[in-house]
Length: 310
Image (cartoon, rainbow, N blue to C red; front, side, top):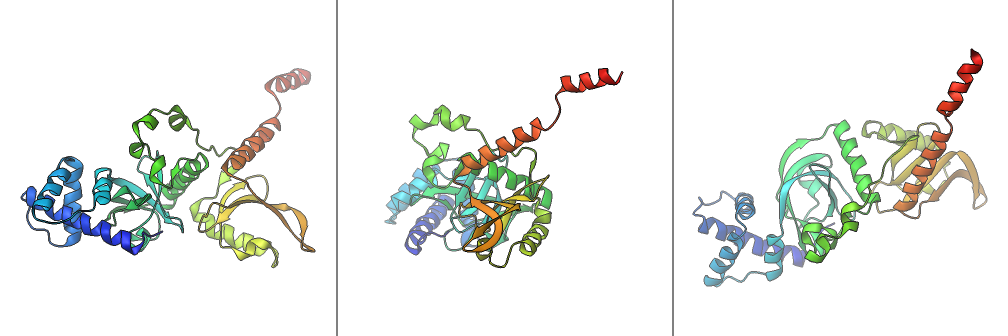
């Protein structure tokens, strides 16, 4: 979830030098502290991108070396408001404010959630491609904390982006950071997101703890899933059938069916199986939805029944 100490050090060294140069060029008042310097400088760079070239020239004339890879990262910096959903082992989950893009970003020296709160905050921050990773610049302005309803809505959107392969784990999949040849790729623009259809439902954030307590009471003491910290994603409204992941969301997803049992190492457990990938989850939801629809009588049959009654 973090950059290597070496990469973090060289990123911050050039970033801070550029920030000071921007202040000098723009004749801004001296910053109160390094964080304030970065906040003001990145705003200026967002408004006037050519300032970065001026800052590089300014520093070169002063004999200050700047890291070319860091400069390239700053040129592609995406400064905006994001929803920080949660921190995972692979990276912190950020969604754009409109929910159209999702990012798994790593921190410089500490996880983002350790700076402003564990989960569910709207923050003004910057993401950029660096060292073949999506990096958060480590400077956050907290705007608001999400209530349970909004958090659940954004979490549902996160699952949709993840299932559709649109959760960006590295810079190569982010449209703004791709080569021009990829910008017009219709496959990128037209990928469908996961629809959660009846009888499947999201597990609302406010009942996650209750759901975990229920599963803890139900699972046999020797059930293999007990070795993990679980997070309930989905549940069928008509049966005790769940889709669950690890709490650290490492990509493994299981279908847990509390209506069936099977033998495991000579002992009886509730049936579960690992889903191969997000496509299998999508197919499962669509298949169950069709079965659910087929369980209702057709309109024509309803009309015939009404005529018979007459």
